[in-house]
Length: 79
Image 1: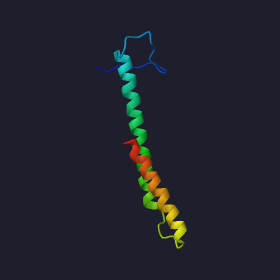
Image 2: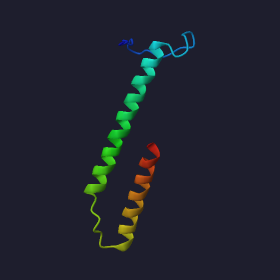
Image 3: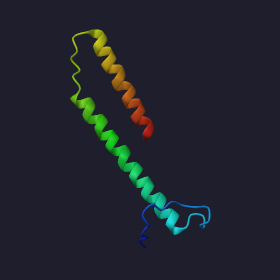
Image 4: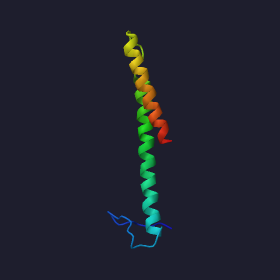
């Protein structure tokens, strides 16, 4: 069963709770959110692969490693 949502549709309190329209609205919202999270994850992976880890200065390298660890920890929270 496919439900077509009107453009700009938002659930309202006047509707039946979790009606087919609301279910479709939230299903699409979750799918969009999933796509966004996967794209951000791919961006993080490519950023970390492209990063130059051979910094001659030990402080610069420590900063890079700390930034990478923070970015990975942030992405892990999205899982």
